[in-house]
Image 1 (cartoon, one colour):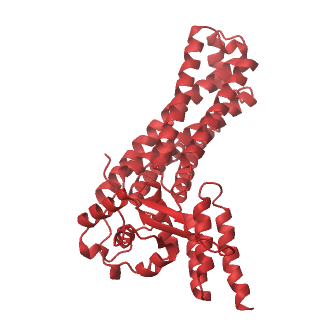
Image 2: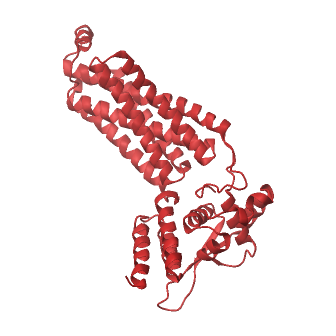
Length: 102
Length: 288
């Protein structure tokens, strides 16, 4: 009865954006801006990826008085999952231009 | 109103939303607040804050859901056991031989099954809104069964009883279909049905048996009085409570089975009719 739950178009787009340079830490708002996603769509995706061990997060070190920001990048499993999801989805499904303003 | 004040309103709104996250997701709430702190422009800040609040309210995957649901299930099981314990203390003649202890053992086994089922299904119910729908479905199923009992005890018309009786499986079909279609997974759909069945079973047993123990099995109808006379039981209240506890146990067993049967139909229907979003459609933001 069980079947593998496919990633949403937006999740694949987030993983792809993070996989472009997997070693680079990214800000949440930068991902929103780059992908045309609203925060209400991005954060649930990030949380689910983190819950599944596909996303690593850390706090930015900043000067005193300035609130640290949360940073994200894919784990090794996340990089592998992004590659797998990218292979399984057709390019047309995940073009950023088709994401719309979610 | 000065621009800075309006900025602070966006921050206050998000801070209020973050508060509702509770202990489960503190880092994510702080992350949203920190990100908002970096944003310039009134519109940008409000759009970001409102989006975060929307996700907190509707699409944030809850943390510790398994613990919360399992805890609630253990509490409901303890209350159910408590009702039976009160009945055994108040009506000691209920335990009149080995058969009574077999019934008690079967009851305990049923409660353990409920607790295990709730702990198994809960992690698959992904999202607060879906969990809320499951809870509403469970309550609706329990209410329809209770309504059937109420109409029957008041001697209401048979068509009304039949209509109410068909409502419970229909709700089960609906939650099975809805959960499967929404999640895209029959596994999630069946977990939702299972959890709704557990909620309905607990609610019905607690209402039915709790009311019987509190009211000493009243009202005593003609059928009960007739059966009591031929039963050889020592007193009417003990006999009535024993009868109600037996019915409660039957409900504890039967309601989940009927609910699961209906839910399977709904999940199967959603599985056969569901289509994945096409390339131009935005998928459910809560779906991974």
